[in-house]
Amino acid sequence: MRLNEHGWGAESAPPVICLHGVNAHGLRFRPLAERLAVRFRVRALDLRGHGRSGWKAPWTIEAHVGDLRETVTAPATWIGHSFGGRLVMELAARDPVLVERAVLLDPAIAVPRDIAHARAADELAEHSFASPQEALESRIGGGGLGWLAHAPRELLEEDVREHLVESPGGRFRYRYSSEAVAAAYHEMANDPPPFEALRIPTLLVVGSHSKLVSAGELERYRDALGDLLRVAVVPGGHIVLWDALEETSAAVQSFLAQA
Image (cartoon, rainbow, N blue to C red):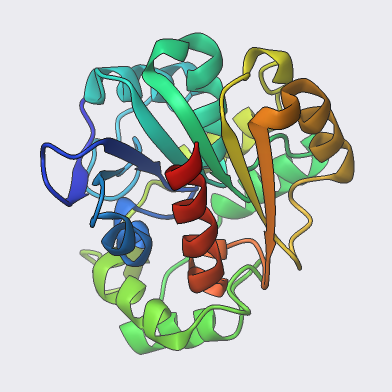
């Protein structure tokens, strides 16, 4: 499946491909992409089951990687947040010619099986709102997992405008397939690619209040990549694109300038 995409920067500039996490969409990268577009052609994709891309099953890692190969056919720098980071790792292991270097924003390298299955079950429950204002207030409160507790209000408002749609019954829901997200959680419970297969220049950005990347994973990544790995710890939680936009942007721009 060829994925829907959002673009910034000159077509002739070096390519940067951005992959979002579950429940999200490519336009979440807009603030970062606008900063990178001075030097790069930035393409932010809507993953299968999300945004304006097709929602058809299957929603396996294999299917997502196949979509990436169909949509991006030339080598590029890849930026992935959360599940998008896991997909960058998968693509680098399976088709290394496409991934010149990687930026992993608080990636979901592996989620413990019990937690992944619980979140998948919760995702399949009803999540709708009577109005956009109710949806916004829910997010201002931090969201169900607390991932939005540090997010600036203006970015939450932008996300509601872009991502929330009215259903035929009059309730409002975010523009993604709950079944696709549940499947992604199950996939994240499976073992990631061997870190030794990911020997490319890599920047790992971790939120200081996030616990998604474990100390053990970080140590294994350091051992496998050595000097190829750079690590930046930024303020806030899991959604480093929102919580620490300036710090994350500075780390990414520095890495892309030097790698």
